[in-house]
Length: 148
Image (tube, rainbow, N blue to C red; front, side, top):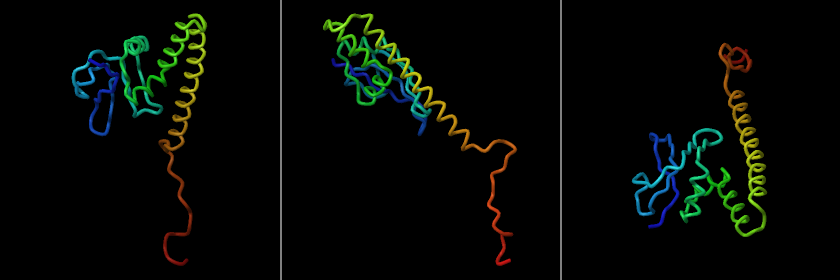
C-alpha cells in the first residue's frame, strides 16, 4: 500500500474547499482516507492554509508521496524545508538547535511576507469598493443630447 498526501474536495459548485489528507493511492479522490492533516481554501487572497506540520512531516518521513499541489502547499508552509534541515542534522552537518534556529528565522520572514500580501490585497479591495453615501464620479460631457 502506498500512501499519498493529497487534496479531498469539499464545498459547493464553483466554491472549492479542500481537506489535506493522507490516503491510500488506490482510494477515490473524495473517498476513504487514513488521516486528515489540514485544510486549504483557495478562494481567499492569499489562500488560507491550516496544516499540522508535525503530522505532515511524520508522514513524509514514513514515505508518503504528496501530489503536485500538496507539494507546493507543504513547501509554502515550510514542511519540506524542515524535512531538509532535519536531514542535515541526521547527516551531522549541523546540530538540532541550529536547524530550529534557521527554521524559526525563515518562518518569521515568511509570516511577515504573507501579512504584507494580505494587507495589500485588503487595500486594493477597499480602493475598488465605493463607500456608502458616495456616488461614483461621472464624466461631465454636455447635457446628454445632440449638438448643443
